[in-house]
Each structure stands twice: as structure tokens, then as C-alpha cells.
Image (cartoon, rainbow, N blue to C red):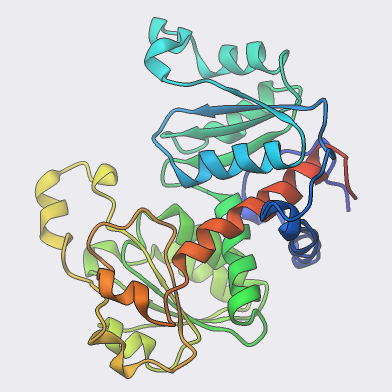
Length: 308
């Protein structure tokens, strides 16, 4: 398996063998991610963080991952304070920045931006989310969370919320299809999973069913993956208001769940998970956020050739 100098753009590029290799490497990184061990694995390496959209977890976990491994981070900062505000193209920005660093993490509101950037970059591009397209490193940390907190083999998982615009669930579906997962979908009808994705992952071996409510969805699953209704993806604010509060998890909702159910969420949440759920053994989303650090440490080590 060749990871060194390779871009990370979409989960469609990953085989199950490649995913398993990354997850195994991430497990070895956990003590370093927790600060229990020190590492200079990426000493002398510099990571550029170019975020054209707001982010907390993805940006900070990449920065943490690089720093925990002894590397350095070069952050673009505010787009308004950069040459992009003067009209510089993404291609030119990439061609300038790749002369300063060893790898680039890119988040951009336009779908396909990471692929475009990889065509102009001399260093690996890691896609940290491109519009409603792909978010492969989120998917890898989601898979790692499922592996650590539940099971990847014979998994029964429910995906709920914004399944139309949610790039996290799109990427996750492709990955779960490699493991033959049983996937239950529930969303407002306006936000159902696109047919082309359902058809694609079904052809890849996933078993899909759609249900009308969260209560029905969680009655027989190991993991519930909840997503935010993304206001920023709606061209019409009135359409957002129609669906904004249609799905919510409360402690009452969870009465139909199995005791071992784990609830995941890519965060940030708005009002789709009641705060009281945080205190239940089902809540897994804050652990999930932490798991982004060892997973991104593993990816950085692999693409920069520090580990094999």
C-alpha cells in the first residue's frame, strides 16, 4: 500500500485494506494523542492549514496531530486577511503555499475544490471538507470511533438528520459499504439520501432501509449517527425553517434503544441532541471528536512517509 505523497480526497479512493491499515496505525498513536508519550516523528515537517470555511474540531485536531508528532503548523488564518481577498485564485494560492510546506489540509465551500487543488500541488492535499462533497478524514475518525466503541463487523447503524447535504454521511456510507453494514436511514423527506448514493452503496454490498422516525430507526441498531440540519447548505431560508426542528434525540427517545447503543455526531450540534443525553452511556460524540487526533496523526505520518 502506497500512502507516501498521496492526496487524500475522497473515501472512494480507499480499499478496506487501506482503511484497516490506517485504523491500526491510529490505535498505535493514541498514547501520543493523549499526551502520555512524546514523539518527534514529524520533526522538521510543516503542515499548512487552509480553511475557507469555519471549523473548530477538524482544524484544531489536525494542528494538534501535527504538534503532537513534533511538526509545525502554518495557518492561513482569516481569508479576509490573505491575498484571496484580493482575488487570488485557489490554484495560485496552492502553488504558492506548497513551496513553504510538506503537506496541505484544505477546507473549501465548493465541491471539487480539493481535487482541483491536488492537480496544482506538489505536496499531498488532505481534504478537510469540500462543500456538500467529501470529508474523508471525518469518515476515517468515524470508523475508528465505531471500531473502538462498538464494532465494524456485522454493524447495524442508523443515519439520521441531513442526509441530502451532509458530506459526512455520504463519505461514511461509502466506507461502511466495504464492511457490509446494515444501514437504516431517517430524515425529513426534503433531506433524504440521494438515490445515486443509495444505489451505489447497495451495489457495493450495504443493506439499506428507510424509516420514518428516530424511534423506529434506533430500536435495533448498534450506532446512531446523528447530523445537524445545515442551514448554510440551503439556498432558500424558508426551506430550512420547514425542516429545522423535525428530528431530535431526547432521553425519552432513547427508551426504545438497546443498552449498548452508541450515539455519534460529527458536531457542531444545534438542538438535535438534548443536553441531557450527554450524561447517558449512549453519548459518544465527545470521544469521537478526540479520536480525530490519533486518526489524523496516522494519516499525516503515512502521507509524509514517516510510517508505513
